[in-house]
Image: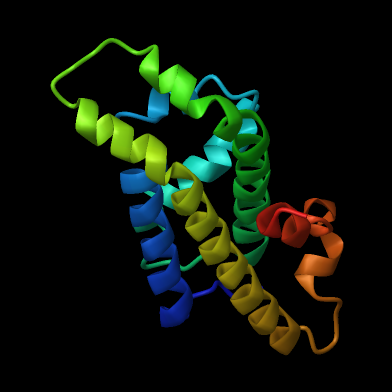
Length: 160
């Protein structure tokens, strides 16, 4: 299988990573994120997609790996929606007071919208990859149809 080197995909992955690092996994929210019940493999896939893109810029991305990373991020979105959003303000207020209280409060206030934007970007990436996958799948089944973790990825990202 060819590696994905599409500029639209690379640009979107760069956007996803930048948004995740600055608005989801920033210094204010990371301590709470790490308390979520998410396995190490899922965290590794999230980290690869959002922080280690330079490893793939020249060689391209493996489609099946990108799909698994999207599925991991979708699981993260679901867990964060269900287990972090309801208690985020309480957990943030229990943190030691610092000079950055206003920034910490802003991170908490905007987390829901930022998590939704992250989910929307992931969904857009997934749709683009499926388009490419279908176009390449002339004499074989599309890769996404063979990865069980993807069966409910849309539901996890949309939140239904």
